[in-house]
Image (tube, rainbow, N blue to C red; front, side, top):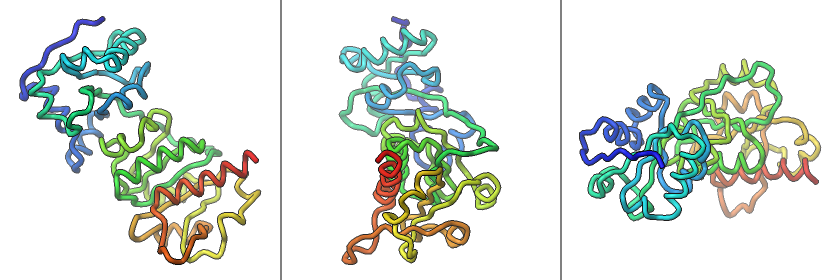
Length: 270
């Protein structure tokens, strides 16, 4: 196993960087953008990035090194990419930087994947229009990947895709997705050439009546938790209504995403 480096000081530059990247504020988002790095916490997310050259550094404690799951993560990653840096933090220091309480002590810094949006785009895409809740954003990405939609467009006003809360909610989906952030309405007009479908409570088109229309690539738009899809996008998209009992006003946006994408998957498979 690669020789681990010990860290015990809160003033260590690496620890300062981790603390910044684990924050959810605008300063942390800026640093993630400038460094092209983010931090994942927990065994499950570390396992999701195993064998990736984008997993750059692993952080744990002496106690963590003795836990079989963490040891397996470290051994597997170093076997594939021996250049991955391994750091062991003092237990007291670990408690000062983690928000996960008694969870197994493992973190990793990963490189944020950057992608160029293809000029001739013919695959399905999920568009998040100012979805602000980090849990919703991560859950939508997770459902999208499960339904086979691997292209995610985050419009301005959407929670930062690579923040810790979104990453935890995504449960490792980020590794397999192509994520494009900071888009505007003009970007949508210029780059999305496949039909736009936007959920709307005012639409007369029922999701379950689309049928064969769902067999060809679609760009699904889901909007802000309170305001829904913006009027500007609704003006250029086909509205789709998810039928539901009238005793409830609307579905949570993450639930609506799962319903629509899995209906599309059902039509294509069966």
